[in-house]
Image (cartoon, rainbow, N blue to C red; front, side, top):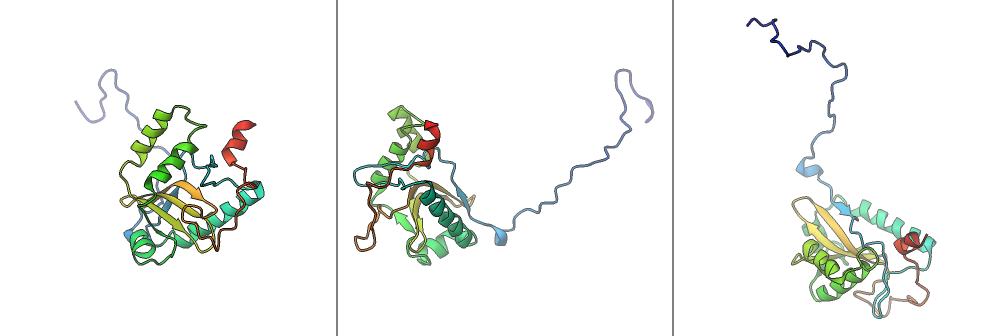
Length: 194
């Protein structure tokens, strides 16, 4: 069969598309790699109030202020090497492994999931699947907030599991001046009530 002859049932397409898809985005080089902060954990913005810990805030204004500090923090550390500059060299004083409070953080994690996941076994399974035996880290910035999460070195992602707006996980009685009775604002609880 010659080149120009078409077999029965086949259609030859001589039209070339006008707009070919071209990807102008260059792949990341290892030098350009930025740390990504993952805030997709479904219980993250269901702030909690336990007898020994709260991450609830006073109101939307305080949440806006704290979240702005969080965004500022991201811009300060997104180009840093997680292990070398944040954890090992203690380049940032409030960034470290959390070993002693693993069970406490699990308790808060499970509590933050009460609204989106009503079954306690499902909440515990969620912890086991997401965290399991992963190393927990606290990262924080100066006098601002702290957050706890897990780090995926391969993808350079820090997944936040808990915000500690008031420094209550590792309190300093000289610096902690929160009145937990004033704090009752939770972003997602407010949205769910609407």
